[in-house]
Amino acid sequence: MARDIFISYSRQDLNKVKAIKKEIEKATGAQCWMDLQGIESGSPEFDSAITEGINNCKVFLFMRSENSMKSTWAIQEINFAAIKNKRIIIVSIDSSEMTDVFLLRYGRNDIIDWNNLPLHDKLIRDLQKWFPPKKKQQTIQETPQVEEETNTDLILELYSGKKGRVGFMNSEGKVVIPAKWNKAGDFSEGLAPVLGDNWKWGFIDKTGFLKIACSWRGAGKFSESLANVKDPKTELEGYIDKQGKLVIPCTWKEAYPFSEDMARVSEGYQQWGFIDKKGILAISCIWKSASDFSEGLAVVGAEHYTYGFVDKNGRVAIPCVWEHAESFSEGLACVENKKGYGFINKQGQTVIPCQYRKACSFSEGLAMVMDANLKCGFIDKSARLVIPYKWGHSLGFSEGLAAVVDNNHNWGFINKAGSLVIPCKWKLAESFANGAAWVKDEECHWVKINTKGEVLW
Picture (cartoon, rainbow, N blue to C red):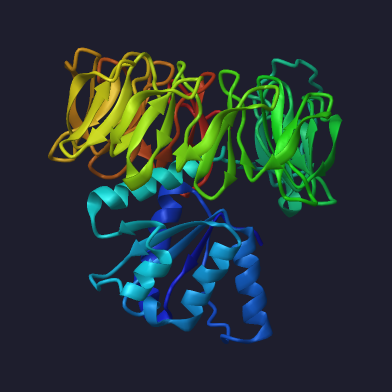
């Protein structure tokens, strides 16, 4: 089975690595693969499991320790990942020094000290960026009554039916598209990617009609009338239009949805650039990482984990001097240096000093910031503390409400005055969208609530 992340380690570090795996999965929602069964090394079953796991992963994490550097199989795994051109990150989990041989072979890869809090947080942020959270799926136990719907503006949510099949329901919890697909993604621009019985991807419309045949190895969402797809033979990616016609050939190792007429693409490991809607490489693949364009600029990563911004001509608009940078939102971008987090404008000028333990992008005029005591509040664009430092964690404002975590690690929602309008009684919460939000109840079931905190379904 495909997993997002392959974890390579020495079994002598099993308990430590299991804890790291659990934290990564909880923070990112990504699926991690590691050998927990103790399959005999060198057996056909072991070889097959390892090669399949590495072939199917998107990120390869090598848990570097004194033990793993001496592990023949762990070293063979990282060598195989390098041959397969996987995104390799070395995570140091003990205080042992890297041998010269290890540095010679793998020193050019990203190296993260798990016990160094800023680097630890950076790895989690990067993984969250590479594996954005998927919409939670409501489970339907009984065979549902299908509701007739044809409105293309209808908001549809994924749900899980019998035997793990998925379909879509409307905002009232009524089934619109029966659960017949192996997997599916959210609707975007009237179409949703679905995985058919041939284990290939196509697209359906909001009536459930298969508009684009299931013929692709992978498929993203439609954005600006184009969707990224993966060729089943070459495993390379390109773009189709809403008629299913391949308009940009599958020539890229990775391709992402268009944003502001540009799409980020990769020629190989840590080789990122941007194409325009004609498929022309507008910005060369010279960056170690890249984010989508937002407000005319895109975050790019250079050597030594530094980040800056380029414009649509590929010109470096803001030099790569930041330890972390988020996309521009409402005219400002959240950045980090050795002093902490702050905000810059599009000229690269610091308008809110880097003084916070953490910070997130502005949303609806406010931004979450964390003080030295690890409590979260909100500031406005003049850096005035509008909502005091009180919460253990928070998401940004959406539709006038922000999800927050209290001292008991429960989630609720506050308004822009800082008042708690939905009590902190949920185990987890997502932001509001279209008047509703997903929350997890005490039994760890996902339910949907309205702005009054009432359970819809």
